[in-house]
Length: 420
Image (cartoon, rainbow, N blue to C red):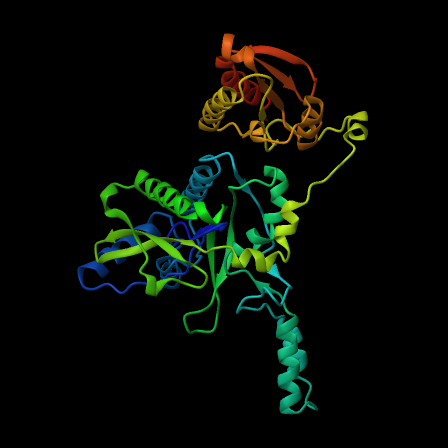
């Protein structure tokens, strides 16, 4: 499991990766700088405040400097949004097997609850106002209140682990695949007793144990490439393995992405290879679930057409790519090339050609209609010979023959024409 998260995207970030399924990020502390370095940092913070990137005020700029969520100005809000979008596109469009999720920000499960708890102040005050309680009874009441209070999330790993089994249906129970999420998390305080709110992004990558080292290296290269893409001095970014004595928790290996600041190098992200222990603990008996195969009477399903008719702009998947009869290996290669072309054009595509279980086109069409997929493209032996393929519309069910070179522009024009 490979897993990583990125902290507040307008300040310093740190990230981690997990193995045989997951990627994750831990909290960083403010760094002490000296002399001219402090002057440079202070000048930068003042510039950000003067030019509406962060709201002015010493407390707010200190929170910004330490990586905690702060009050952004109009320009800072737009920059933050752009960074989040760039990160999201970089992970969800780097491969077809990364899916977005949105999990709960807190958990009532005491087994998975973290060190932080959200306690209602009036409930606590009610207990404190009970003068008849002895000291021991008071402690017991407070402990019971804390125990039954929800725990705010400190990272996205647990939520992704819980979504593992349901998401297997999307990928025909085949690894690898990833789950991506972004949002607010809370970190324990540095000593003042108050938790710190931070914005994190997370990609949890599920893969087999024997390929975890390969995928850790792959995602480390991808993340390093992403950081360097925006840098004035790309060579200031580097990556290195985490020393064995610094490995955390279930991690068997870690890779840090480091940036050379004027005051010295500091890690921005740490990707951890975590193994499968946490996954198996989350899903008791997960191995048996992986082996289950559902036998359903698909004839009844096909008797009545069901369509999730989302507006074209809102549909999560614009086109599904499938293969018909012909040389499977060659057809898949054509699908891979077309998929990459569509992803580069920011057109979301579903890799139906990866499905290994035999399924009729009627069953596939029914499945895609229920998913709200706008078009289904079928690549067959005819495509290898003449470049022609079939395109089926969700809304009209009409099948058209088009040349493979026309597909990207056809979809782009259709989506643009329906934009509101």
